[in-house]
Image 1 (cartoon, rainbow, N blue to C red):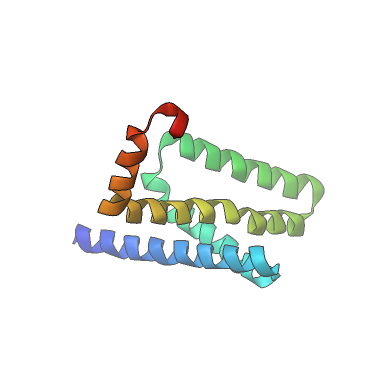
Image 2: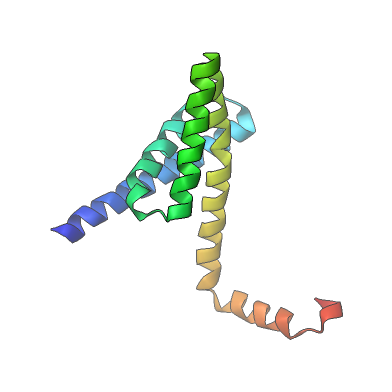
Length: 127
């Protein structure tokens, strides 16, 4: 039963991350506000779903970001600006997710491994 629940959570996390990635890319290239407003809640939901698996330092960083966002919204009343900032900031985690996808693909590629060994074997002046 627990493994079925875990698979459901992983599928949900993957869908939320894909939504964040797609929304961030569309928002970055087109500046279409709706794409950012779709990506931002998906990112918040993804972080909430992954919270139990986050390391301590990641939890502290997320808590600090939430606290600063709430402080900015409460002290200035500019909740729209906070939302715009959250939508714009979705690009960074989407970028890291895309790099992770590339790393996973490269890790299983014998050609990339051979290229890495070749580069490491070169003298320092040729690297």
